[in-house]
Image 1 (cartoon, chains in turn red, orange):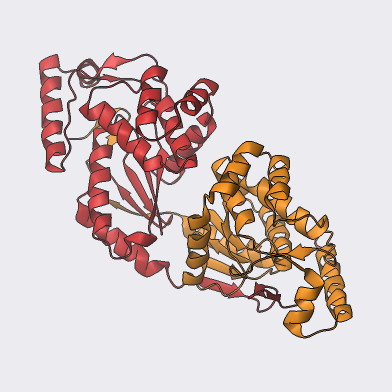
Image 2 (cartoon, rainbow over the protein chains, first blue to last red):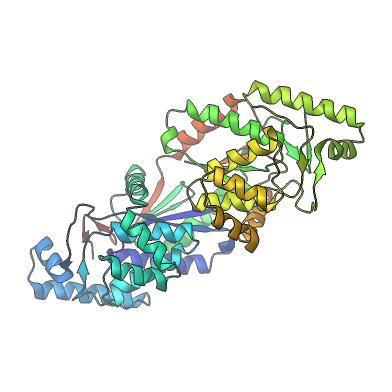
Length: 229
Length: 229
């Protein structure tokens, strides 16, 4: 089975949702036959520059900075319940396209999940920037990527088309926000639901995943080194 | 939608099946939303050394070499109907694991289909070897890969585990031979069936692919830069 997870790196519920999904997956009987693929979604693909998270929240919701800081504390308390340390006040947010492009490089190099984890922790826990190339190259190296290769990808714009295409694909599938989980393109889970919801969807998709409906014309195939003709 | 195609590079029906599938895909209305992934299957993973295809056929079926050559001619005639030129007599066959590992490198570099095409043509049309590293590196470069990187992958054994895992996955899905096509892990097509069979499965899978069954707890997600809390 394949689980695709659309998320954005500055979305607090996405990191929490990832943990809840992983918790469900860890206790899923057929977990060794589940492939997890991270997909790109940008909450605000038009964003330019960086801004302070408290100020961004205050402006977006028309709140005082104090109230915005309190919202961050409430979110941190929720994250703590899933074992995550959030330090949101004092972080900056910006356009996540570059960070998403690094996730694509991670996929090509077989370390996609490590890149996603490293970027989430950098942003939500360690107040490190995902919005300048110097910082992203450091994080790429920490995640197991080659630094020169990461810089080359960042500077060339590579994977930009893939990031945009995945965003559109999520919209086509009906996602209006993230995290958005899709199992075998059959079942979706919208939002950071409790682990139990993921367990149910995994079980249902598994039951549904076999047997395949196979069209077998009987014949034109090769088996055991011999080919029917 | 995702179509996974399991095949082996020395399987004459696989190359033909690929063409028939491509023909169906080219006239499929939603072709721009179909992702094609090539998967590894080895008809004989235990094979060591190389042998002449005529002799291999003669030994396997207990035929004279003349009859084996005639089987090759019959296969070439069938391939020609799908626009392929087969020159089978005089080719050598051997273990395809190394070639399959290059296909994985091709996937990582975004040129998987070009690698598959190049390898098929080399084997079935041009009588070039898929069984020594020198020849494989040349073919890798022709397919758009970096030669040094290809050599590094071949010599390190990289992607060997993935090749074996995909073979097992095909068996788990019920494949007994190749080519074996799987659409969204819901529908399978066994063998090089006529293009019409692929058209039908693509249409059926498309109708079946949306809408997703989405579990929406309503809430804990981020949209448009704001997060429900």
